[in-house]
Image (cartoon, rainbow, N blue to C red; front, side):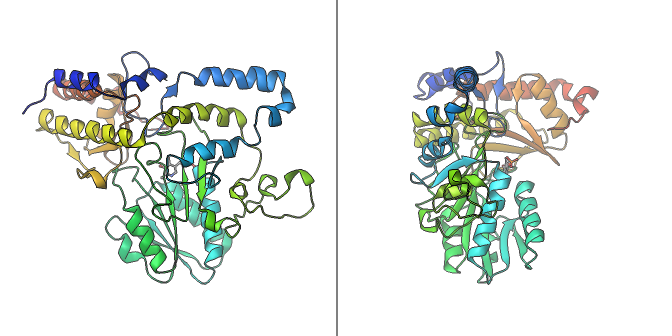
Length: 412
Ligand SMILES: *Cc1c(COP(=O)(O)O)cnc(C)c1O
């Protein structure tokens, strides 16, 4: 049966999560489908930033390291994130960027498997993961190599010469979802360690790191977790590896007794060993606001709505844009995808620019992918209808073909 706009209005009326949208600032008229790249701003972020600047920094100054809990914020936030990714208290902290943390984890894991030289990675992964490991290998100079494999080839690439399997759970471009459980099990069967990047999973779908016996993980907080631009990443090390897994960026925050100011390094044996040094507190503090919204939401409900939004979006694309050069590359199967829909299209870049101009914000990933992210906390069902309608208008009137939509900025 063909859908009408009213079907979507009805779905919104019956959506148990609809009230969360009020907690985010979305500019008037904008349909924001890019929360997988930069999450929307929680309205309370401003008050939190103001408090950190005026009170904690402005008034309390250095006392805030204790009084406002600045020093322990990395663990406090980590314990909250842990509840979203199937980890326990004391297994997660927030610090540094995803890339830096991945460097630390892979270095620590390689030291735990000194006789093995191979790291299995997905060649088409978000490049920084591969770049960081390539840099690490060069720096170590111990003859490590990356064995690149694509979706469908991963299990076959995991043999008993592998030290580490390092993959991103949901693919940034296509949105395909790897079987964390099966891949981690295969890694362990051959004696390797499994490191997962959760950049496009945390806050997008339920993740069960300990349920899958994962060894280590990292992820962004500025995407689905709405932490703010450049907010610190999180890093997970399973309890059983803490004390054995030692990362090499051995700054004072990871020292057993940072305020003893000893001459020589002694690693902590808890998750804080994964930190390095003084964190940008403003960013860290503000990112807690987004996390606190998740503490009141049910991850299973989020997943349910996400799948429904993406199912409907794909259905509308097929119904209403039949005859144009759009091909959905995200798997249809629920257990094979995250919370995004990617569409390949030859003129994807100017079409996306025209769409953004029309108030539907997605993004473009070279060479030909139009990418739409679905964040159930603040995206509504009627947004699906309106977004596809605006896209259809752009296609019908050909406005995407205007020269201004073909200029490429520094960030796509
Ligand atoms: C977004 C993303 C990153 C970002 O890394 P930064 O160090 O924060 O710049 C890394 N890996 C993946 C898979 C991502 O999707």
